[in-house]
Amino acid sequence: MNEKNIATFADLLLDDYNVKGRTKEDILLQIFALFKDFQTLQIQTHNRHINIIDDKHALCEQSYTIKAMADNEWRSMVQQEQIQLIKQGGVWKISGGL
Image 1 (cartoon, rainbow, N blue to C red):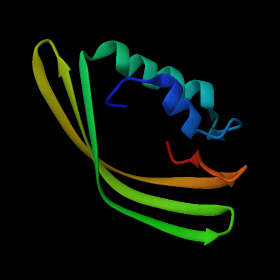
Image 2 (image 1 turned 180 degrees about the vertical axis):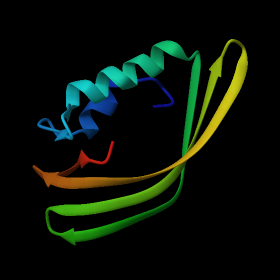
Image 3 (image 1 turned 180 degrees about the horizontal axis):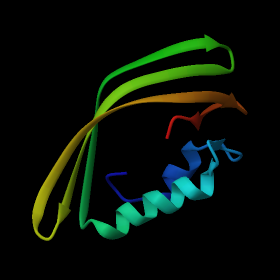
Image 4 (image 1 turned 90 degrees about the vertical axis):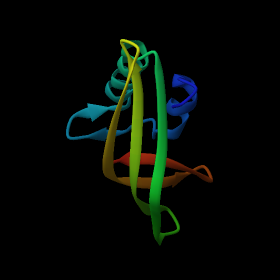
């Protein structure tokens, strides 16, 4: 995210991501809009806890601070999130929570 690399972020998402009607494409459009709207983005995660449920499912709970430069002014926000993960082809992918 800090490098504004949409392709790298897209690789983290399950191809058939669909939570509450929001698809992978919807998430990527939202992230692209953030990249476009802010000159600089900085994201730092805190207090990450990963619970491995079984060999194909995990749950990640974390806090994050997002700082954005807009109109030559820094804006900051702290959030918490819970992300569901699925192991697919030996790689963990985000399957929900965004």
